[in-house]
Image (cartoon, rainbow, N blue to C red; front, side, top):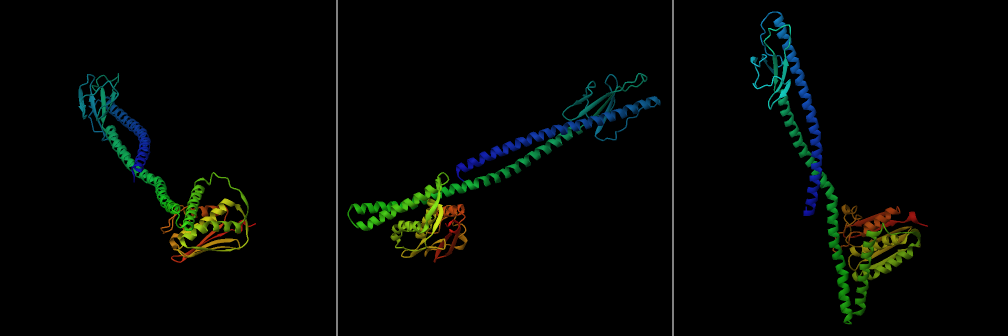
Length: 390
């Protein structure tokens, strides 16, 4: 992974994880506040209920002229203390001694309190004035809730980070593949153009000296046509969606002969002979796109043919085929050979866009594209033009 890819990955993860965790934090904060309010209300209800029970027990004892004997509450989370009107302790199991008896509900860092006043005008002898309930349940629940939320937030961050990393890798994968394809394409372009340009320069230099004039002219024409073919493929691949095309009646046999004549000068440099077996045929297609099919199949055959071999170009019963006797294509690679930038295993190279253009045009006109190939024996590419016959 290069520097730019790492930068893009980290930026994506920062934004994705940051925004997701922030949203999750807001939701958990809302949940936390609601839970705290609920626990606080529940404890307040429990303390009020316990205070009322203690009030009733104290008043009943006084009415029966009995001494009130403090007992532990059924709720083990609650503790209470009894105070007189001056705030003196009459009975206490409280863990905290500093309590504001005038504040009905209060909290500190460890406990919550509820203060109930005992008021009965008919029982002036009752010494108990204040009942104080104490619990640490609220604080305990808050601590548990905080730990729970922190754990959830951490686990969620790890999970979101993992998912984000996978998503980033998936998103970057096609971009990375495209970049690698473009890098490969640029290298192949330099290699592919280097050969005809080098031949042009050498031939021009030799021609300038007046030696091997006829041979050098053939090399110059061949190199110029190779560069022209490469340029045409690149231009079509890049701008085909912007260009305007028009379907017309085409003398297919004549078009094939023009292409064969064009590639004769290229084939001769490898001592390859092009044989034609053509029937008269008229089709209804765009001429440029038809030419792309014919030119690329013939050009492809020349590239991958052995020297001193031949190529057979046929047009019979509306089926156009080009047969070469070269390196052939392995069966496992035949499905991928029509993909863009896919090249045969041969030093002749090419950009890997020729057969992709052929495949694209065939799909546009519903033409059946076929391939038969045997490694080290050769290949036959065929296109069925029956659907566009006139």
